Image (cartoon, rainbow, N blue to C red; front, side, top):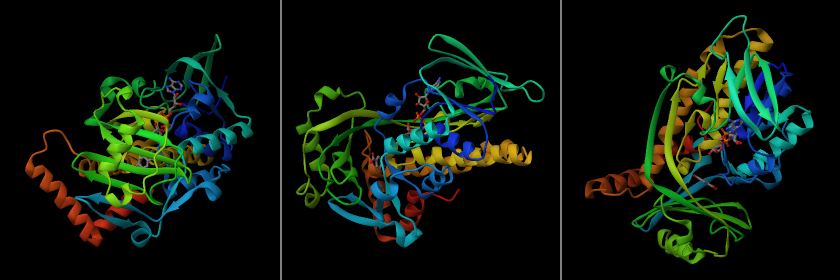
Length: 392
Ligand code: APR
Ligand code: PHB
């Protein structure tokens, strides 16, 4: 097979890039290790920055954001039994939109199918060849699917295959450098068919640890509590979860909390991770393949989106104007924004969680950080600008 761009990974990054390139008439083949149903079964955060919403429109993806998306003009921060609100639109003129990532991925798959573009599911043994060579030899991707071996020759490869994918590992070790911070706790999350406790998100730093109140819609709530990452989920009954959550949010919210059976419950580890550079020859990494953030700042999907924006613009320049300079600059351009999202996610996590062995001084630093945020408009503006999404 021949094509212009092979995209490894059929998650949000890969599908969004595929759609944007398709609209520009650039031919794409998508390789996905799982099935569409499996990919859509992943429960993921759902806070969309304006940049991602704009990219979905540029990609001519029909979404239900207008009818099912929830515009949020602010969020609530709680600590020491008090709480305050960060007003996004006051400081940035932009809201965020709450719309499940699963819905984004579903909309992207529906759009992909309408293009008639080639997508292989259940692929195995994906290997990247000749990524490093420039000039005459073209890049190749080999894989097996349904017992058949495939070999695709292409101009460029987009590694959108997530943290456990093959793309990042295909960059020679001596050509890449990684940066990592693993947090000493996890997030225990549940999904329940209950009305959200509040119309906006609530981020709480309590003496017992972090808690987050979020939602998917008026009848579907998403809650998280900080928990030991090696806890056995079987030790967390729904009742224990609701009791823990109630203790960590202010009484006025706890009193309104609607509890009910969990329809999904899991513990996820938290880490910050970046690989530099995000490109090697004709291989370009996007999204979780290149970086991971703790979910505290809701930056995972949104930073994947800005990578896709930069790579899409660079590939369009290359194919439409034969200008390869943006491609050469892709990693530097993407990393400039990636590191700011990493910093914000690290700052939100450090400010809102209780770490093991925090000293009395550490606790005073955390309280001072939150006091400054509560009382200073410039601090609130800085947080709002990061939360709604820094410009591309
Ligand atoms: N070959 C083909 N596909 C692969 C391979 C492989 N070797 N390895 C992984 N994949 C697929 C996975 O099955 C997954 O569907 O690549 C896809 C990667 O998708 P994500 O992990 O969702 O990463 P990304 O598309 O960058 O989206 C980032 O998803 O994980 C969340 O928090 C993250 O919200 C962020 C968003
Ligand atoms: C979610 O709704 O799942 C969610 C919201 C905000 C976050 C993380 C997760 O920071």
